[in-house]
Amino acid sequence: MLKLLHQSIDYVEQHLHLPIEIDDIARSAMSSKYHFQRMFHAVTGVTVTQYVRSRRLTLAAQELAGTDCKVIDVALKYGYESPAAFTKAFQRMHGVTPLAAKKMNAKLKAFPRISFQIQVKGGTEMNYRIVEEIGSTVIGKSVTIRKDAYKEVPEFVEGIWRNGVHDQINELVGRPAGSLLYGYSFNFDEDGSKQYLMGAELPTGKQIPDEFSILPVPNQTYAVFDSREMIPDDADIGLEILNIWKRIYSEWFPSVSFEQVEGPCIEKYYWVDDTHQESICEVWIPVRKK
Image (tube, helix red, strand yellow):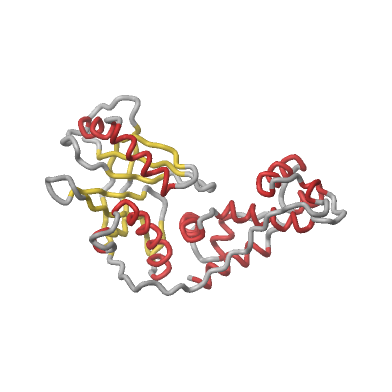
């Protein structure tokens, strides 16, 4: 897997001055486009699109700095159709215009080439099971996660607990108040944004108010990870769930013959007992054999 990830970076670096399609980058890593994008983002913290753009603007700045290169020539070389579009992107990254970058002593930013290395972990095993799940229709409340899922999702979940929406959903689907909803991540975009919905399965024939969202979940094969088997008993459950996601992409996927397929990822939450003092979580990721 490390070799394949390095191959994908090699491909990007060799084509920064040419048109680049994500399908071709994924193919260089022998992965599907969908799996590669999710894997790359989870492991590196940036999307494939962001990486390509940042590397192009880094090289563009190097060519402009203290030289007589024409801005329009550099813009066209790195895939920008107009000087205006190039200037906007350049200034967003470097904080100065391309013309200013041509002057001596201009402060510029560099986004280095990514490299992947083996990192020895603590040796904590990752137990999982493969499940065939029948499709369903889910009702819930959704939000667009634009930048930091590890911050925005907990804020959203806490918000619907406080404003009563959580139990409105429980009431609509016929579940007791305080029952834990499931979290669904879907509609992943190339810019790293996605939709996140907290909800529950909708009973057949049930009508719902317009302010709630409907999510069809297809028949799917899932890899399922149980938080009880992956985190210490005294850990902060909320923070450790986020670490489980990171471990799945950085440790589990690179070591197995499965890849992620398009479809909602699910966090299934359950109360440990009737006291509602402690919950557990299962992470469900749609997969297929490579």
